[in-house]
Image (cartoon, rainbow, N blue to C red; front, top):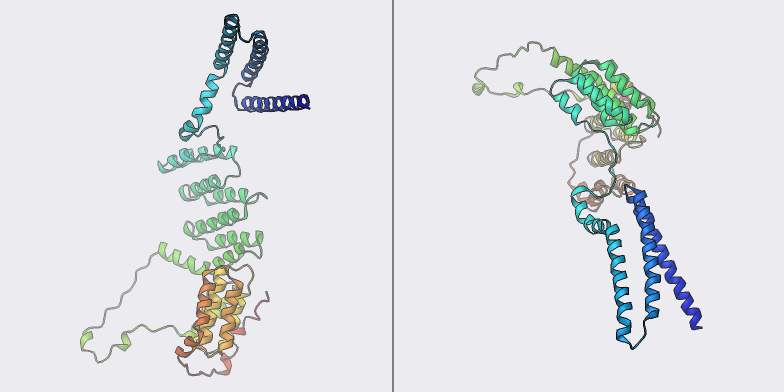
Length: 415
């Protein structure tokens, strides 16, 4: 039985030694810049260790117990062979052992053996651009894009130089289109590229039509998405933005009327106060605007407020806000804001307690992770106090021509 245990132990240690040695052999060969030399060193080391093992075993067997003088020479030979083998192994592996010990400290300064991910560098191009050499900057960027053709940073930098420095909007648009038309281009980067192109059309050329075309590319590429909603919102306000930019470029003389003399002697100064825009007039403008741009959330929100506060038509305000809330792909934060606004209008507009509570509970249920849900939950606990503090607003009857003002541009789209 003892013989079997001895054989098993021998086999176990043989497997451990061979396995550990094989792992070290493969690891060192892969990590070395000269694997052939490492393989040669391993072969020589295995021969030395094996020879030393058998030599030491032979010497130990020749030692006679109890005879010190007779054993002196074999012991000296054993010591000399072990030292010689150790020196030889140290000569082979000393550099590598020192490297293993020192590598944790050295890696703090040189990064160690970790491979650096290749990436483009645009510092030269940026420096040339700042020094007023845009053509040389373009050449430097194209050299990097030849190695990394899908790098959005380089594409955006190249288009920026073409548009802003060279005033060459067609070339900038070609650069962006070439990147955006790639099936592998990320959606967020594509939307950012065409949005930037629209900004350049407005800022540099004051061309609202080209800006609209760039934004429409986003709507066509990503229908029913947050990107298309943002593009539609921009399109809805392009005309106003274009007018502001054209006015900034074509400044006209502004006539400033003379002020009122002796203001302190007047009985009343009410006529000097600026007149507010008629809410009814604003509502008509908003309705016509929504006929052309039904996805303009900003204008629809303003129209809902006018319906509730000026016309006292909470039902029509609710219809407009519900259309915003039920619009797909709207940001959760914006939906929560519209529901909170609806709750405010319901309290001011005379809705019952259960209706307002249902609106606030909708925020809590739909957006449990947003701060708006915590605010809505807090409002639910003090909702009765809000009702008690709400001021009564006298009802205002509308003429027949006003009753369906919010329905003139059609029924709201179903989600």
